[in-house]
Amino acid sequence: MSPNGEQNDAPTPFTANQQAQIASSGIWASGTEVSADVTALTEALVATLSGSAESVLLPPELQELVDQVKAKATIGFPRITADDGVRLSAFSIRLNGDEPRPVVVVPSGWTPLGWTIFAYLYLRLALRGYHVLAYTPRGIGQTFPVPGGGFIDAPFTSQGTVDIAGPNDWADGSTVIDYVQERFAPSRVAFLGESYGSGISQLVAAHDPAGRVDAVVALSTWGDLQAALLGNDTRHLAAVDALVAFTGGPEERKFDEATRQLLADFRAGVNLDDVRAWAAERSPLSYIDQTNARNIPTFYSNTWHETLFPVNGLLAAFERLTVPKHLNLWIGDHAAPEGTGLTVPGPNVPVEEALAWLDHHVLGTNNQVPDWEPVKSQVMFEPTVRESHNDWAELTTSTETLYLGAATAGQDGALGTAPSDGWQVSFTTGELTEAKAVDELLKTGQQEWKGNPKTYVTGKFDRTYLATWTSPAGARRVRGIPRVRLAVTPAGNSATLVAYLFDLAPDGTARIITHEPYTLVSDEPGRSATVSWDLQAASYDVAADHRIMLVVNAKDALYSDANPALATLRVGSTAGVEARLDLPLG
Image 1 (tube, helix red, strand yellow):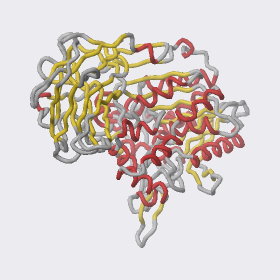
Image 2 (image 1 turned 180 degrees about the vertical axis):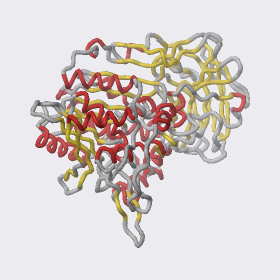
Image 3 (image 1 turned 30 degrees about the vertical axis):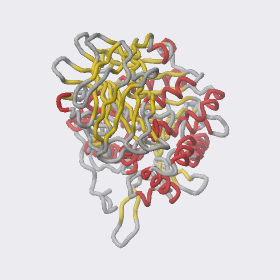
């Protein structure tokens, strides 16, 4: 469909070269756009599946896959009516024959392409022996203005406004289960979701009144939406703005008045207790007891440098699960590991392991899944190195405490073994620096996954706007959640700091290990306080001739900034609660 809402000419053929490009470069064109090749693939696949293609539009491997599925199943494009009359765009594959089969329900991710983006996955699921029902959650999908006023939705767009994984989405999930039970009579029901669909999958499983969800696979998912939006009282503005821009239409059409007000409050930093309550309602962590009581096998997959749903919030949920569970942690950012495996043919371990888990717990396949340890993590930036553990806590076997030594403006301080107090270092707020979490949402992490992590030139870190501390050289196996403690003197009533942990090479270049912001709000302007906060979890090997570098600045493009502009922020160390970095080792 064209931008003016008119039907395009017949889709152009999707080529093997385009398929190879997706496999090599991933699915993202930017933090708010899928690649043109992915869009071309969805158009060609949907046209072929619907029978509207007037010629062959797919490379032989994909065409053969479609033909195989059509030979053993019936393809459908239903509209499913929710309890409040909203019609959900859906896609179905019903396997032929009377033999009871399980169904996999796939709520789409938060994407203008709705359910179409992972059509390849649905074909794979069908050939593994599942009925499939994929649908676009309410409000998601492309919508176009038309001449003279009004809008028209793409065929894969669902009606209504986006509930952001709220109660309407839970109820819609149950309505979809009603639909598949009536039409497929499935032997079991599983939910598989990526990104937005993964959160909906967990929440439907916890809330379906009849408890009909037998397993959940949640890829690039969240556990605690409060932490993802407001971790350490710092608003994750860039992620929210990117998501709002990625619904497929204008904000005033995609969200109802109450949600638009909540988004406005979030952006302005007001009524944040209401935002927290709203986010808690949409957090699987809030319903872990229901998930445990229903004994729903749950598979999680996430990334170390996740910029939409940082990993610590998911770890909090995972640790509380008492059901059969598994957690995979990968190099990269949101959807980078599994995105290509859900979209085009080719080897993709993240997707293969997710499907193996599903096969064991839903199809009853006798495979290697029972032998897996619950946690398996990739080590940055060594893609061939993965480590297995019986639980998350096993990653950390000891903690190295490195105390921050006296630093002076423009000069690095030391990270050492002896406590140091009575010092302060100041830097200027309000400016972005070369020390930053990412160059671009999703894309920087996609490059990490492809083996090209960002190289930082620490000589470009302008000490006017940040402070740095470095350790002696030494091999370290960072495993777990680092923690920072600092005395902070804000320039006004509040201060935002961002701490970054780098692996510093002898030549002065560095790679990022982890980071995390923190915002301090004080009743008294300029009042000092000692604060501690966790950085995001990491698994990273530091070479013997490399050093740890801790950088603290006052601004990162990902986050809100509570500092007065171009003011002086002071950090330091106080006797008895000396500034320190607790480094988890394993």
